[in-house]
Amino acid sequence: MVTTNIDPCHHRAVLFDMDGVITDTATVHSAAWKRLFDQYLADRTRTPGEDHRPFSDADYTQYVDGKPRVDGVLDFLSSRGITLPRGSADDDIGLETGHGLGKLKDRYFRDALASTGALLFDDAEPLIGSLRRHGIRTAVISASRNCARVLEQAGAAQLFDVRVDGVLADELGLPGKPDPAVFLEATRRLDTPASASVVVEDAQAGVQAARIGGFGLVIGVARTGPPSRLLEAGADAVVSALSDVSVAESAERRLSEVPDGLDRWDEIADRLQGRRPVLLLDFDGTLAPIRDDPTKVTMPLKAREVLQRLARNCPVAILSGRDLQDVRRRVRIDGLWYAGSHGFELAGPDDAPITQQAGDSALPDLDDAERLLSSELEPVPGARVDRKRFALAVHYRNVRPDDVDHVISTVDRIGGAFPSLRTAQGRRVVELLPDIDWNKGRALRWLLDRMGLSGTAVVPVFAGDDYTDEDALREIHEDGIGLVVRSAEHGDRLTWAHYSVDNPRSLIALLARFASLAETA
Ligand SMILES: O=P(O)(O)OC[C@H]1O[C@H](O[C@H]2O[C@H](CO)[C@@H](O)[C@H](O)[C@H]2O)[C@H](O)[C@@H](O)[C@@H]1O
Image 1 (spheres, helix red, strand yellow):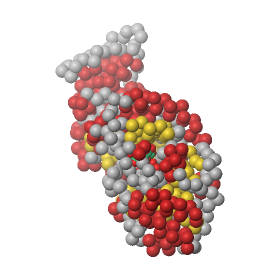
Image 2 (cartoon, rainbow, N blue to C red):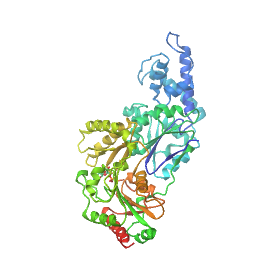
Image 3 (tube, rainbow, N blue to C red):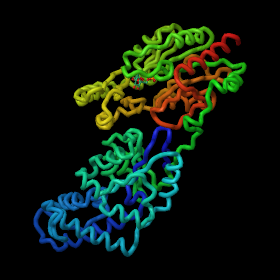
Image 4 (cartoon, rainbow, N blue to C red):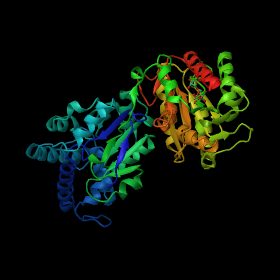
């Protein structure tokens, strides 16, 4: 059995295809298509080059499933050597056009629905309920113009924050799947980028659309039949039922629920008793306050003093999203370990770079993506493309609010075209990174091993402020102390941190207590 996890730490919205995923209506559609095409092909005069064999399950999957009705008519008939005009929405029912035959299929579908009713799959409501309890928003997507009617009949209309169906797609002129437009419209309405959203789909065209759209996780649902057709279309995982999809049980809390580290210093000191802290610290938003221009950021004097004190008594590493050289230049303290590009580039205190080879294969794609993004975003005032060795950041802090969606979806689209890259969200920044299982959490553990500091005699202490820091906070959740610098930029989001502080200045005050403790140990 394949199971897969939706992680509230990374996924903020889930988009469900309707027919065959949440409602047991794919078979009703399939039967209506079969009735239409079998009758049409049997009545049509035989002409050389045309194939009049009955409509099969494979035809449904390959030519019709997930597509807008008229596209389904034309694509299937074209596969049989028959070309019909598209026609128009005014065409009479049954006329030999895409619209005319589409209307007939719809009549068959509605007749069948009226007699069978629409049923919600048993496994749909438990998953959707669990997602909503974890604060994950939900959308239902369907090429069907009958979507609202089906949801109503199935008693499922209230389960979704957003609905993008065939009626809305026509109104907005959105192309059907495999174009990602309907999915991207849903993310726009949910106010969540594609990279932080999950698509759950049973149609090949839908899986392809989600892949092209740069979605963070694409889950295929193959309730019957082999998973291979959805894996080949680009699904990350294929399950046979929604009960095989779980929402990661986590020890996370909302930022507002995490106790203040300065208030709970005694508790922190107790956790350290007799053990040596290893400080692993993020840079922007953590040691240095956020500024509009990333090139103007400097580390406050107080932070420098505290880091120097710490470095005299315990190991200290800086783990930053910045380019390795860039962050070293801004920190400039000897004896520290450094990780740049979110952990893809590492350097020890002796200056020797210890690059993670894993990211190397993505370098040509990062170069191409950089060229494309620089030229596409050049006309957007305030958009800044920042190339690091192993990452490409697009900053939108200074972009007009009306242009922000455009910037994010451009990065999602261009990133989605490179299989070796993935997108990651940060504070008013969206980044492309090598799509391998490596992040600040993995880099943190790797550094500890490299420093020879694993085991119970040391306590890893990590501090960060952003989504990418959550990988490190999660990594040390069991054996370390996680500190988060609160910010309102992502609302009252979930975090793996044990303690929080108000801002970088409060963090420095807390780090000074670590330094004092280390000096007296
Ligand atoms: O992991 P970090 O050290 O926190 O690096 C994450 C990103 O930080 C920088 O961007 C952030 O700070 C900028 C300056 O304050 C701010 O303008 C921007 O909006 C923030 O996202 C840095 O420029 C990026 O390269 C890092 O990936």
